[in-house]
Image 1 (tube, rainbow, N blue to C red):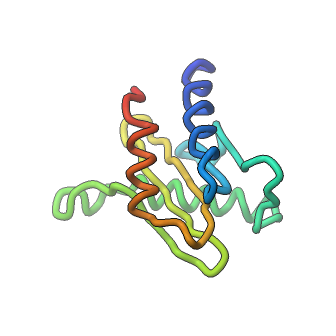
Image 2 (cartoon, rainbow, N blue to C red; image 1 turned 45 degrees about the vertical axis):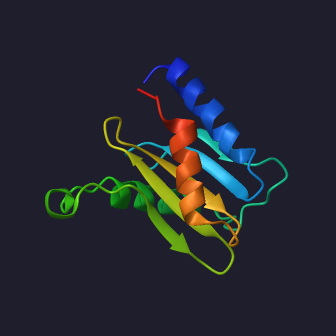
Length: 125
């Protein structure tokens, strides 16, 4: 993928980070590597172990782009996990095999967040 496409993703991730409840918005490739976006300024990651964070992003990427139930249940629109300290939501971009990973405050409305993601990221080719 070209540097220009990463810039487009960076701009869209930044729009997500402008939302009050969002802590992290990043694009992860199929190898689990962060290629665009990141943490909101002045936010300390809840998971400060770099190796654990990388392992988690690899896990999210693999789980989100799986297709084994697509025929019977339809494709994944997003996966959400509500934890005590954060809400984690991943959105697959099947054509590019990228995943948008969002970390938000526990008070976030997941459905509203999903609508915001669609609004901001629609039109990326």
